Image (cartoon, rainbow, N blue to C red; front, top):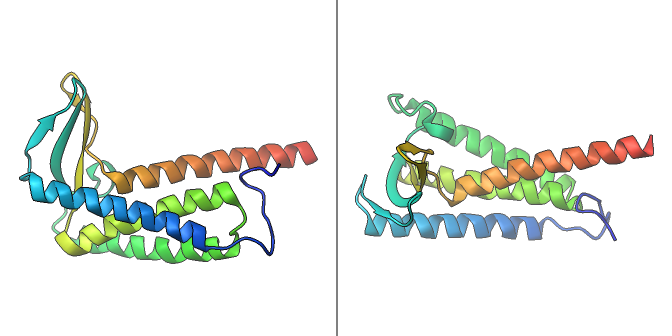
Length: 170
Protein backbone atom coordinates (compact mmCIF):
# COMPACT_ATOMS: atom_id res chain seq x y z
CA UNK A 1 0.00 0.00 0.00
CA UNK A 2 1.36 3.41 -0.93
CA UNK A 3 0.88 6.54 1.11
CA UNK A 4 -0.98 9.54 -0.27
CA UNK A 5 2.31 11.35 -0.73
CA UNK A 6 4.30 8.64 -2.45
CA UNK A 7 5.27 9.08 -6.07
CA UNK A 8 4.61 6.62 -8.88
CA UNK A 9 7.15 7.66 -11.52
CA UNK A 10 6.12 7.04 -15.10
CA UNK A 11 2.50 6.21 -14.24
CA UNK A 12 1.25 9.47 -12.83
CA UNK A 13 -0.58 12.07 -14.86
CA UNK A 14 -1.44 15.69 -14.24
CA UNK A 15 -4.97 15.21 -15.64
CA UNK A 16 -6.73 13.90 -12.50
CA UNK A 17 -5.47 16.94 -10.61
CA UNK A 18 -6.64 19.34 -13.32
CA UNK A 19 -10.05 17.62 -13.38
CA UNK A 20 -10.33 18.09 -9.59
CA UNK A 21 -9.50 21.78 -9.96
CA UNK A 22 -12.15 22.05 -12.69
CA UNK A 23 -14.73 20.41 -10.42
CA UNK A 24 -14.01 22.99 -7.72
CA UNK A 25 -14.22 25.83 -10.26
CA UNK A 26 -17.48 24.48 -11.68
CA UNK A 27 -19.22 23.97 -8.33
CA UNK A 28 -17.92 27.34 -7.14
CA UNK A 29 -19.19 29.22 -10.17
CA UNK A 30 -22.56 27.41 -10.21
CA UNK A 31 -23.21 28.19 -6.54
CA UNK A 32 -22.14 31.81 -6.94
CA UNK A 33 -24.36 32.25 -9.99
CA UNK A 34 -27.29 30.80 -8.05
CA UNK A 35 -26.67 33.34 -5.27
CA UNK A 36 -26.46 36.19 -7.80
CA UNK A 37 -29.72 35.05 -9.41
CA UNK A 38 -31.69 34.59 -6.18
CA UNK A 39 -30.34 37.12 -3.66
CA UNK A 40 -29.88 40.85 -3.63
CA UNK A 41 -26.67 42.22 -2.13
CA UNK A 42 -26.94 41.95 1.68
CA UNK A 43 -30.06 39.77 1.71
CA UNK A 44 -29.94 36.52 3.62
CA UNK A 45 -31.87 33.41 4.64
CA UNK A 46 -31.53 31.85 8.09
CA UNK A 47 -30.85 28.12 7.78
CA UNK A 48 -30.02 27.21 11.41
CA UNK A 49 -29.28 29.03 14.65
CA UNK A 50 -25.64 29.35 13.52
CA UNK A 51 -25.73 29.44 9.71
CA UNK A 52 -27.19 31.75 7.04
CA UNK A 53 -27.05 31.93 3.29
CA UNK A 54 -26.16 35.55 2.51
CA UNK A 55 -25.10 37.51 -0.55
CA UNK A 56 -21.88 39.31 0.25
CA UNK A 57 -19.29 40.94 -1.99
CA UNK A 58 -15.62 40.86 -1.03
CA UNK A 59 -13.30 43.24 -2.86
CA UNK A 60 -10.43 42.20 -0.58
CA UNK A 61 -8.68 38.94 0.12
CA UNK A 62 -9.24 36.47 2.98
CA UNK A 63 -11.21 38.00 5.83
CA UNK A 64 -11.76 41.09 3.63
CA UNK A 65 -8.08 42.05 3.84
CA UNK A 66 -7.59 45.26 1.78
CA UNK A 67 -11.33 45.44 1.00
CA UNK A 68 -11.33 49.18 1.67
CA UNK A 69 -8.87 49.89 -1.15
CA UNK A 70 -9.87 52.10 -4.05
CA UNK A 71 -9.92 49.25 -6.60
CA UNK A 72 -6.22 48.65 -7.18
CA UNK A 73 -6.43 45.52 -5.00
CA UNK A 74 -8.64 43.82 -7.61
CA UNK A 75 -5.72 43.71 -10.04
CA UNK A 76 -3.24 42.79 -7.32
CA UNK A 77 -5.32 39.74 -6.38
CA UNK A 78 -5.89 38.81 -10.04
CA UNK A 79 -2.10 38.97 -10.55
CA UNK A 80 -1.46 36.85 -7.48
CA UNK A 81 -4.05 34.35 -8.72
CA UNK A 82 -2.45 34.15 -12.16
CA UNK A 83 1.03 33.73 -10.64
CA UNK A 84 -0.28 31.03 -8.27
CA UNK A 85 -1.91 29.23 -11.21
CA UNK A 86 1.37 29.13 -13.15
CA UNK A 87 3.37 27.98 -10.10
CA UNK A 88 0.81 25.32 -9.16
CA UNK A 89 0.52 23.98 -12.72
CA UNK A 90 4.33 23.68 -12.85
CA UNK A 91 4.39 21.82 -9.51
CA UNK A 92 1.56 19.49 -10.60
CA UNK A 93 3.46 18.66 -13.79
CA UNK A 94 6.68 18.11 -11.84
CA UNK A 95 5.17 15.90 -9.08
CA UNK A 96 1.96 14.27 -10.42
CA UNK A 97 2.47 11.06 -8.42
CA UNK A 98 2.58 12.77 -5.02
CA UNK A 99 -1.10 12.30 -4.31
CA UNK A 100 -1.67 14.35 -1.18
CA UNK A 101 0.59 17.15 -2.41
CA UNK A 102 -1.20 17.30 -5.76
CA UNK A 103 -4.67 17.07 -4.21
CA UNK A 104 -3.69 20.02 -2.02
CA UNK A 105 -2.32 22.03 -4.93
CA UNK A 106 -5.23 21.26 -7.25
CA UNK A 107 -7.71 22.26 -4.51
CA UNK A 108 -5.90 25.59 -4.12
CA UNK A 109 -5.75 25.94 -7.91
CA UNK A 110 -9.50 25.45 -8.31
CA UNK A 111 -10.25 27.89 -5.51
CA UNK A 112 -7.84 30.52 -6.76
CA UNK A 113 -9.20 30.37 -10.30
CA UNK A 114 -12.80 30.46 -9.02
CA UNK A 115 -12.13 33.67 -7.14
CA UNK A 116 -10.10 35.20 -10.00
CA UNK A 117 -13.05 34.58 -12.34
CA UNK A 118 -15.25 36.57 -9.92
CA UNK A 119 -12.77 39.44 -9.71
CA UNK A 120 -12.52 39.66 -13.49
CA UNK A 121 -16.28 39.31 -14.02
CA UNK A 122 -17.66 41.41 -11.16
CA UNK A 123 -14.79 43.29 -9.52
CA UNK A 124 -15.44 41.39 -6.28
CA UNK A 125 -15.74 37.83 -5.00
CA UNK A 126 -19.24 36.53 -4.28
CA UNK A 127 -19.43 35.05 -0.77
CA UNK A 128 -22.52 33.36 0.65
CA UNK A 129 -21.79 30.97 3.52
CA UNK A 130 -22.26 32.80 6.83
CA UNK A 131 -21.53 30.97 10.09
CA UNK A 132 -22.04 32.76 13.39
CA UNK A 133 -22.29 32.35 17.15
CA UNK A 134 -24.55 34.85 18.88
CA UNK A 135 -23.74 38.22 17.33
CA UNK A 136 -20.24 37.14 16.17
CA UNK A 137 -20.08 36.22 12.48
CA UNK A 138 -17.20 34.42 10.82
CA UNK A 139 -16.44 36.20 7.52
CA UNK A 140 -18.69 34.90 4.75
CA UNK A 141 -16.98 32.55 2.31
CA UNK A 142 -17.65 30.37 -0.74
CA UNK A 143 -16.75 27.05 -2.39
CA UNK A 144 -13.49 28.46 -3.81
CA UNK A 145 -12.45 29.47 -0.29
CA UNK A 146 -13.21 25.94 0.92
CA UNK A 147 -10.94 24.55 -1.84
CA UNK A 148 -8.14 26.89 -0.83
CA UNK A 149 -8.56 26.01 2.86
CA UNK A 150 -8.68 22.26 2.14
CA UNK A 151 -5.53 22.62 0.07
CA UNK A 152 -3.70 24.54 2.78
CA UNK A 153 -4.61 21.93 5.41
CA UNK A 154 -3.49 19.10 3.12
CA UNK A 155 -0.19 20.86 2.37
CA UNK A 156 0.52 21.11 6.10
CA UNK A 157 -0.45 17.47 6.66
CA UNK A 158 1.65 16.36 3.69
CA UNK A 159 4.69 18.20 5.08
CA UNK A 160 4.19 16.70 8.56
CA UNK A 161 4.00 13.20 7.07
CA UNK A 162 7.05 13.86 4.86
CA UNK A 163 9.05 15.04 7.86
CA UNK A 164 8.01 11.95 9.85
CA UNK A 165 9.08 9.67 7.00
CA UNK A 166 12.41 11.48 6.68
CA UNK A 167 12.98 11.20 10.44
CA UNK A 168 12.12 7.48 10.40
CA UNK A 169 14.57 6.88 7.55
CA UNK A 170 17.38 8.77 9.33
